[in-house]
Image 1 (cartoon, rainbow, N blue to C red):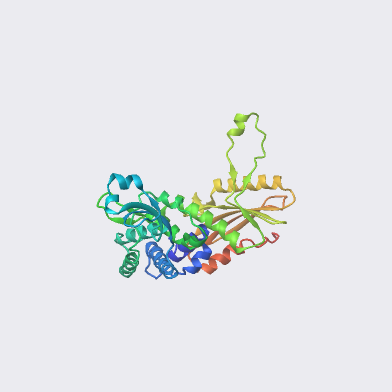
Image 2: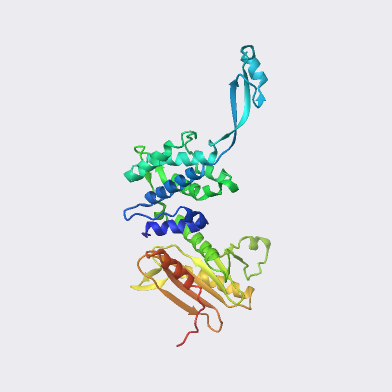
Length: 352
């Protein structure tokens, strides 16, 4: 599934829950941009903004052989090295410095990009010019992307959040090939499992941020079953929704399915994917038993880049419905958002 680069970036900013930060670094993809190019543009513009506002600083420990006492005297080291007779001593003290973890990760990513062969020439020059401006920051290559999870941001460094997310994605995707040592951008959009998680987080955060009618959550439903033993109970899988939207008079259970095709061909006829429909039906049946006062709507949502459809099915004798719809990601982003909001429009009574 080929999603336009600019739209993929919007998906990321919603999934990362960093929409406000993205407004500060408003970047538009060039027609020929790859995802790596666009992420680099974000990093370049964001780093330039940070340099103008001032790099993050913090107190870091320094050790120095000095002729004047400063901070804490390291007496044992000074005696062992016989520096006191020369009127000098080893001291340790805290120094306000730019050489802090967030800046080291930023510099490591800029260096990482300089070795990516498919990066556009003008972007490479911009990356190099920013890299040089971080001369007082230590270059420490990132050997494990989990280091990003250990970074703690506070009020004065919160504006690094988006850039660190971009840095982490670049380190995850620009992989060192074993054959010749070149760095190649793997491009996660071809990884269906990774994209499925991204799509689910995007949809959930979009509805949390863009509308106020519904409370938004990932909800765990309770099985309407009575097991005959603890062992039987332990075997029951969790029934957890991707997105639950709850209002006083309506409830929508939304199941996000990132599949290349929303329909399967069976004997030359297109059909819905049965397993997906069974799962959504089970969610709706259990949800309505837990709250008899509100109608429940189940919605299967598939991304699409070529075509769109929406079909509704009423549960016989009840006010509940199932819907199957696609979201066209190959259109201007504002229309993508409009289509998502339109899915919340109350269903009209079906007329035969």
